Length: 398
Image 1 (spheres, rainbow, N blue to C red):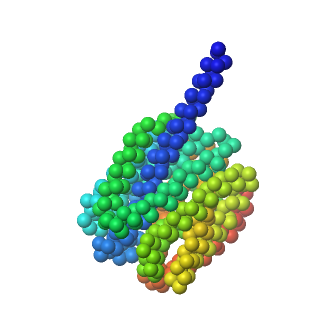
Image 2 (cartoon, helix red, strand yellow):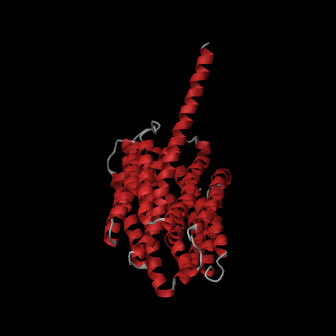
Image 3 (cartoon, rainbow, N blue to C red):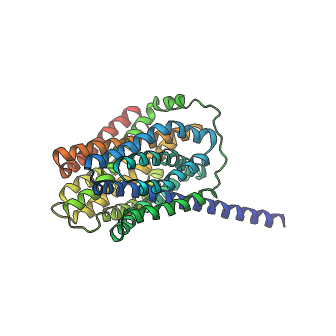
């Protein structure tokens, strides 16, 4: 009888754990729909309001810089107060930001709304990775992170395409209202998620934690690879749809991210498992190469629109596989009590790289043309892969 009761209790516990994980993954999906659609829709919305490519890049830069600054607070908060508080704050910010976009009547109001939305970027992303890492068995860390990134990819796959369909059939206001409704649902579901108990740090010197992590050169090749992946990702996410809408006759240029997302599924499903088995660097390098080549191929889509399929598949696998593997590599190297801070710096590295890359790309597009700028960005990513291999071997990071 006692054995049966124990087995039933374990069975219920397993189901409770699975339901909790699924609930959080569903919240993540909704949050990232709002995140990804804001990145692809807002540049076109700004153009429709009379803004230029410079303003389209500037809003992304302000968004990411604001997130980097705020993450100095929210990153260590994950290590001192637990994962759920910053996750709730982030979910609320992402969920309510579409309402501010709806009420914005000019470009500068959109800029302010983006700074508010950056609270979500600062609070949710690193805390989400930390929560999944807390749930994962150590031997399956890469696999669990792959599932988490897979949900992100599904959001990228469906979000921008749905948003563009709504906008084309109705208008931007209808999409912002729908995104707000999805945000309210995500807030409700996040309240039901239970975070596993973990050992938290008692120290509150967040600046000291950041310095400690940044001064450890073992992290440098990993952060470097994340920076390169993020530059390519930011350029594609901010400008690919705009470029395709200007140079091709596609009715829905966001189709690029449908192929990108489908390819990302393959990257997420394979990279986590393969990096667990063969090592992180062996997966990151070919991922960077594919991302670079995929970005470069966009240069040729003005002459042959079908090449966007090749571009999006290569870039999707390269981005998803490279970022997933780099995050797993960071968790391998990080102490549990500093995990939130390490992942906060990772997210800040992504944000700075996307923001700076988008801004510089916007300037370069006005100078040499958007197509040529894609070619330069692709070559930069490919060359960077070789530089990171040299750095990894020099610092003997495993």
